[in-house]
Image (cartoon, rainbow, N blue to C red):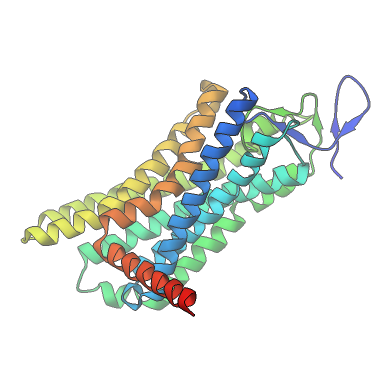
Length: 322
């Protein structure tokens, strides 16, 4: 079992304290209710998209297959932080075990990198469909789509594996308090007994690589899409292309915008409170708004959701009558 050594005595403690959002007991309960509602809405919204794509054969295309995988990813991404946050609101000690902290660190950042990969693949799919419509069916085949999905998942889940194994073997000294609602690498590495400049550099690099590579790629892709859309002669065609890409661009802006604010410059520039707020944007708000954005701006998805919900209501009525 991992130990935490204090300077004051020789006792050992097995865990960290996540301060979360310090406030009176009433405030903690209010936050618990608020984030419980957000979590349930996030699960329901993303699960609805997955079910709509799964049961509607008209949505068995690369674009919606990628969207369904992205929604599945968002469910696990928000689950890596919010359940522990909810437990923390009701806890008096606010302690998270070493294993729990390291697992949260691994899944939160691995799934975050996986999200970067999926957003890049999704814009690649739309860029092909709009800029090369005649060649799109022969390029973006089911086989290629499946391979891209597998690459996103495998690469993302292995991205932070080695650093978290190394960090889990380190010893931690002094204060065990992490002024955050999750196990963020900055506060976590600050608690190690030995200064770990190399590990800090490795983690910063692993976070920066997806941002540096994929964000410019996405921006260039959207520039090409905009150029192609402006050449579309019909107004309905332009509107459909803008609606489809606008949904994706909104999600990209929310996620990358907040991540770039958080990790684009040294975190020491931001107070702990600001770090928590910015982290909430890409860890909780983006998964919540993803199904809303895609369902409201996509007619095919809205129709599929209506059909799916209609079938579920019919099944419930039949079950009640029987």
